[in-house]
Length: 397
Image (cartoon, rainbow, N blue to C red; front, side, top):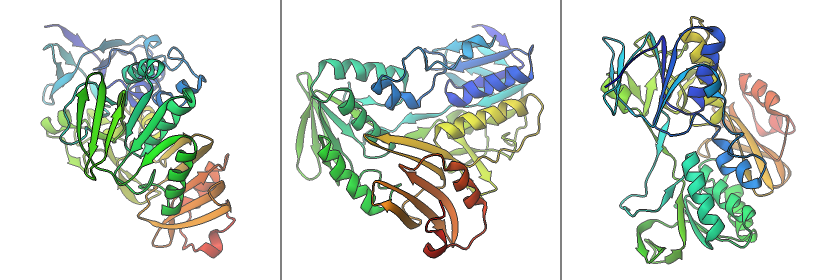
């Protein structure tokens, strides 16, 4: 067992951790900083794993976030297992001890698994290692089953097909349409047709009941009785927030997240949380949120780092995310959920338009479909009190 002593300690190796480390070093040039990450790599940008890397626009080398250049000690391949809140200490899976003055929990999430399926070789896509594994399989194999029709599933299916046009790609998912939890129903159904036209076989409303190995192949069975055979299977089913450490430390938990103040500290003012696990209040939306997107991870990590170093900044950033789906792309800001009241303003249906998401007449979210450089306008609109209708929203952005 080794003992380490840090002024600032970060648990996590994702984008929130990297951003916090950067802002800490900017605010405190001399203070010791430690980082514990279960990954073997230093922090890196995650979005290129399902976007730019497959298009050849980025490389594995240039997605590194430069954390190793900040004069901090990184403990890679280590998993934090316990927080001693009374003595400001953390222990890892090798019984190493880390003391701290301020601690940041940026533990991210673990990919959800297919219920009832326990077969080796399925790639639950999230990390740099997952990209390396999938890239190797795409280079040598022919057929690929993508389980899940949400954010990651839709991106990976498109990425594989664009990278290797000869690949046989099949999507299998529970919902009626691709991105159904985000998009209006007609847009979601349009994407089913569009993906089929792009050469991806789309099988909506299918529940995977079992996956087995047959030689080197995977056999996927569904509740409807369909059976598929693939060289490789990759799944994108969302994540489960890694909140076990916080729970065991008796930190307050709500909506599978660690409750933080407007300044991102927990009820223990020496412990902060940021990124996928943080449950926080957004003043602009006037509601509590837990958000699993890159921009929130980065901006929240930045604010947490500054506040750990002594600032008193309120975190008030609206959630923002984006995606690429073959030839289409979109940006979204605010709260985006297909169960909300939706107003669609298409310049050309499903080719270019703005989608507004409302609750009680107030715009809570805006999705810009093939519309660019309008995010700031969308943010200003969300900040307005309303009420709004189709008549006063049409053409607004």
